[in-house]
Length: 127
Image (tube, rainbow, N blue to C red; front, side):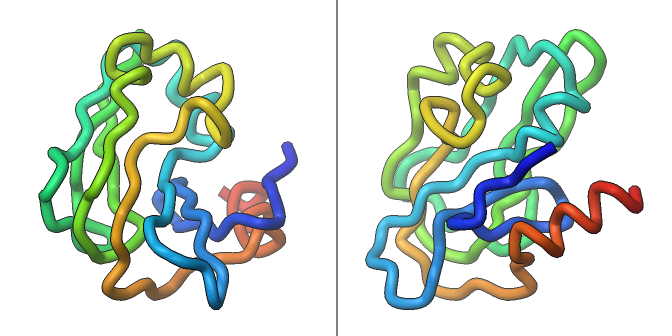
């Protein structure tokens, strides 16, 4: 499984398009690894616009035909946009987790413990 090098990842299987010097807002989503593990996603609950999210804290949920999983924020900040298309059609997350399946955008206050694509690949291979 390949993970885009231009993104950073969390141990909870979320990604963020943050790199030093990147301007806000930053886009967040779940990885292809998470989407594959969940199976067919049938329901997406996202944080509300204006909500404060905190790194590694629950900010929503994803329900699949297999289970319900918490959605964790990869960064701390204010949600400024959510992807209503994935709420209306959750299958988009499975089909394009790094593109049209993005989940929300954040005006970032802080980010910590983010993994490079190579480190995230190691994590998914060992787990």
